[in-house]
Amino acid sequence: MRIEFWGAARTVTGSMHLLKVNGKQVLLDCGLFQGRRQESHDRNLHFPFDPASIDVLVLSHAHIDHSGNIPNLVKQGFKGDIVCTAATRDLCAAMLMDSARIQEQDVAYVNKKNERRGDPLVEPLYTEEDAAAAMRHFVTLPYERSMEIAPGVRVTFVDAGHMLGSAIVILDIDEEGKSKRLVFSGDLGRPGTPILRDPEWVESADYVIMESTYGNRDHPTEVEARYKLRDIVNQTYRRGGKLLVPAFAVGRTQEIVYALHQLSDAHKVPQLPIYVDSPLAINVTEVYRLHPDCYDEETRRFMASDEHHNPFGFDRLTYVRDAADSKALNFLRDSVMIIAASGMCEGGRILHHLKNNISDPQTTILFVGFQAENTLGRRLLDGFKDVKIFGEPYPVHAQIESIAGFSAHADRKGLHGWIERFDKRRLRGVFLVHGELDAATDLAFNIESNGLPRPAIPVRGQGFDL
Image (cartoon, rainbow, N blue to C red; front, side, top):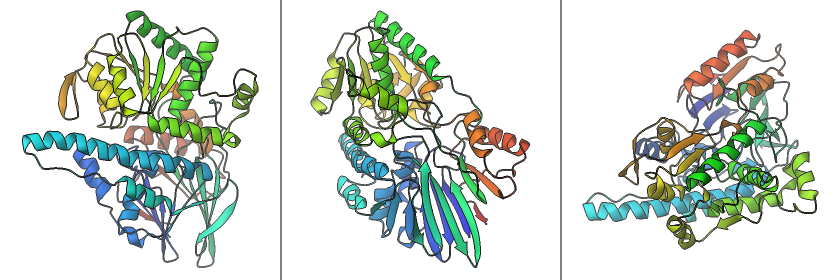
């Protein structure tokens, strides 16, 4: 048995790990890499293996950095099953089509400029037709049920608590008369966060592939995050500015809306209009409504009260689907809040809002999720005074804020708590992925200090025989 790491290796994007066992190839996740534009396009376009040689894909959850390159995989010859939970399949149906649509729209926008300048035209990584074709490969499996996905390989999903449908992947493997268990954490959620259940514990494995996004940081509490959100909303309102929130359409948007709903009920924020400007976020919110089985007890109680049948909608909230209505938001002069994808500012409608407002000192840009290296979101958080949007330079005069407390990832304490549950006598190897090197290194040191095997932090393309 051999595992090779082809994505999310010393970075947080492009999750993709290849397991070779019993003459078959099992791919764990197939995410989009996000970073410098040309590097990202080249890496996403060219797989380091023949897609037709992959027998089955196991998908931990629907976030684009884990699922977003699936249409390209199918387009280039993959013929097998894509195994995931039902909620993940439902989310991917919306998200992959949206990803394709954004690519086609962005390419059309860029090509207009390229044509005027005489530059070469570009093509999208994949189209809506490619995304629709990929959905035919999805096969769903409920939590805590198992199925054979390859000779001698059985998969079981347990709740990762990271987003709707997210799963910890347990692979029980029989190879040459020997039994082994490989556990892939996917992305681990945070205990005690609203809407979703807490991540589940797995106590027995021979090998663990584990995320390390916040391996060197602890999050503020949910209460602290809501206080900071309240203060930022109030400060922006007093300045008469717009509050722009680049938010991932799945998970973060719903959590922000849920928090605003509760702050509004408590009269802690002013009566400013709030727009969720994302067709994907609207579609995803509908999927959330279809899966109350994934909610925690607090959210079920909130929904059960007479006035709260919908935790994702209240009287000052408007969902914007039509492109013309989205453009009209840029002509508003009063203080408003606009939540739009993408969360790292690498595509989607948020780019148009940034283009029109980033040089206004009354504007606040609020980040509520992790920003990967070389993304526009990371450059803004790092204090760049000038940035490029659609290839054009813009001075940054807006106020830049961030709230880590809405992160859907386990922090240092949560990661330690999860890995420490494993049986130390059985665990033979740990591989840290989905984290930048400093975060993974800090987490590795603490894991080893607690008597567990010293974790490996693989580089892209590195393989290990298990």
